[in-house]
Structure formats: C-alpha cells, structure tokens
Image (cartoon, rainbow, N blue to C red; front, side):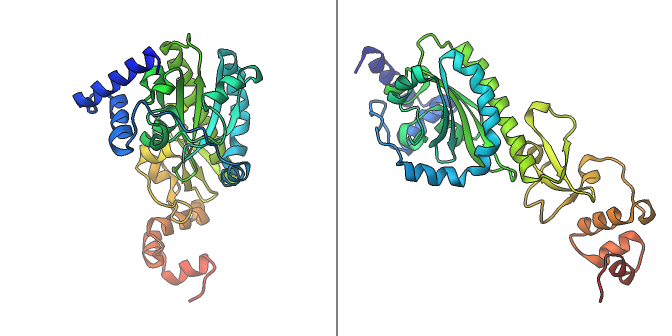
Amino acid sequence: MSRLERRHEETVTAALGAGGAARSAIVASWMRSARHHGLAPSLRPRDDRLTQAELAQIRARMEPVLVAAQPTLDRLFGVMGNLGACLMLANDGGVPVERRGKPSEDGDFSRAGLWTGTLWSESAVGTNGIGTCLAEGRPVIIHRDQHFLSANIGLSCASAPIHDADGALVAVLDVSSARDDFAEGLAALVSHSVTEAARKIEADLFHAHFPKARMVLVPGLDRGLGALLAVNADELVIGATRAARQHLGLTGDLARNPLPLADLLGVEAHERPEDGERAVIARAIARSGGNLSAAARTLGISRATLHRKIGRTE
C-alpha cells in the first residue's frame, strides 16, 4: 500500500468514527460503503467483468436509452476526450455498457476498471461516481480521495442520472479522468456538462417515447432541467419528464390517466362544446375520472347525448 493510500484509509476511518454523515454527503456515502455494504478502504477492486453474452443482454434491455444517447455521447466525448477523460454510460445496476475513450489512453482506463462490463455500484466498490449517483439519484462529483476504496483515489469522476419517460432512473452518464492534474475546479465544470448532456438524453428519450405528441416546456423552470410535457391532440397531458413531474407534483401513469394541460398550467381553454367539442368532451371525461354521468353534468348535456357524441350506445 502506498503512503497516499495509507493516509486515505486513515482519513476514512477517522471520518467514520467521528460520525460526520449528517454534515457531509461524501461521509454519508462512506458510511453506507462500510456499514451497509461491509467494505473496507483497503479492499482491492475485483478484476472480473461480465462476459460478452451477459453484456449483450444488458445492452438489449437498454436499447431505447442507447439509441437516444448516441449523438449526445459523441458530442460530449468530442470535448471531454481532449481533457484526458473517458466517458461511460452505465445501467441502473452500475455496469458501464457504452464507452468513449482515446485508444492511446485505453490501457490506463482498462487497468483502472473504467471499462464496459465492470461493476461500479456502491455495494461493490464503495463511494464512486456511478454507484453514488445511483444511490442518491442526483449528479455527483467524486474527486480523487473522496472515493471509498484507496485503490481508486487516482480517479476523478462526474456523473449524472438519466430517467426514462416515466421518471424512473434507468442509466448514469459518467466522465472520469485518471490524470494527476485533473483539478477539482475542472471537475465541477465537467460535472455541469455531464448533467446538461444527461438532461439532453432524457429529452431525446422522452421524444422517442411520444413521437406523435406535442411537447410543452413547463414554464417557470430552467430550460436545462428538461421539464417537458407530452400533450395529445385533445390537449391532454399523456406524459411528463421527471423534472416536470417533480415541479407539478405528478404521479402515476399519465398515458392511462391523462390530465388536461390547461388545468396543470393554469391557463385558459375552450370550455363549451361549440368551441371545440371533441377536446372539451375529452377534458371533461378526464376530469371526472372516466365518470360519464359526471362529465355530462359538467358539460350541461344529458348522459344519453354525451354517449351519442362520443359514439357510444347504452
């Protein structure tokens, strides 16, 4: 063990003994690594990787994410590759399934385990960019000696979560460097770019999931958050990104239980049948939770008339 690794192990041990988890997100992650996952800073990372067949199975399950991510991954690596960094896209289990790196640096990254098919969950290697991002569901920077394992203190990692069209965390985007001169300030700038790229992938994934829907940007939020609503021809919201769900307090399957766009955004909408009969009826039924009698009362027409208008028979 090198002098730096020994000092790092002493630092981690002291922090755990002092109980600083409430004051530091890094120490909280170290605490999970030690007490929940039973790891020690001196543990050497396992050198095993998934087989090509196992990796292919994971990639097949992630196909929509991989397709949506390719253009953004290429653009991001076009910038980050010049910083001596590699780029990885990992699944929700912490396994990188897609990677970008310069061939001249591949050997260094491979020896460090920054490769497809490796496992970077917190339960496997403790505090690290990919695993801690998954554990906390937010963008993270794990810079050098902030890693839990002393073997990983030469790495600097910036990661951001990627959510699917239903708001579930499905992947992590990570940019990592093994360079000694990769300063913490530079890591912060890289983190911003990684987070923006992750939001772009989310938006592209959302567009692909609702190819025929109209996209509405939720007003009053930073555009970089990617708070989008998918709206159908009846002005009903049938989908929302995670940022939109959080801001508007949305839950559940919006495709099955759509909500009127006007109600969510607090804007005016046509409310009489003659102003747009089909959209008005659809909104009335949605607001009533599918109760046609209540919808008919809202519209001021009989239930039989409503049935006739929507093409149903008693």
